[in-house]
Image (cartoon, rainbow, N blue to C red):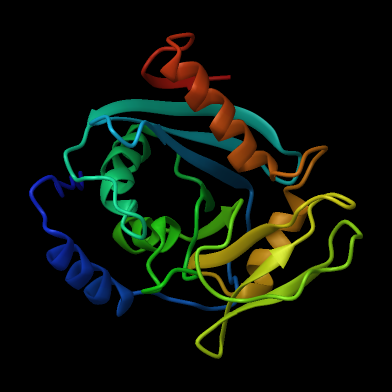
Length: 230
């Protein structure tokens, strides 16, 4: 069991960890089938030490939930933009370890390599768990892009330091795009393709949308901690 403790880290030490982990990222075309896809989300108040994390397992391509893992954890690393993985990864790892079945691919509410140091939560967690992971975020953290056409499914490259690190993807007609990037074991085209297949009726793809919903219910005390089959 991989346990993470970032509670006593300084930001300088966290920066070095990001640089070290960056060397272990694998960016490549998807070379595996996806039958079970997972969505991950984390919820916390930036001034609180309590973090709520959840991972929901979904049958793919039907996008039918089959179970979810929830965990609450106390985290002392402060809220620092660009270093949220040091608040999120430990709780997410706890939820991951509870899963009786590991997914073929994890979609995280956040960024992969589309991060100032190339180490968003999807990349950070993907490297640690050695599992294919992609990030899907509601806002850009770094880089520039041209607005994709208003048609659902259209995308444009997200470019940072002259490198394509992700894409702006129009998940619904005439609605703000989402920002996708590979985290581990995927590349940009494959990430766009898989997230496009995960879009249902809403702007957010089903894995992160459903994860967000279940984590919020957990935070409100409506569902219990642990793993639950659907």
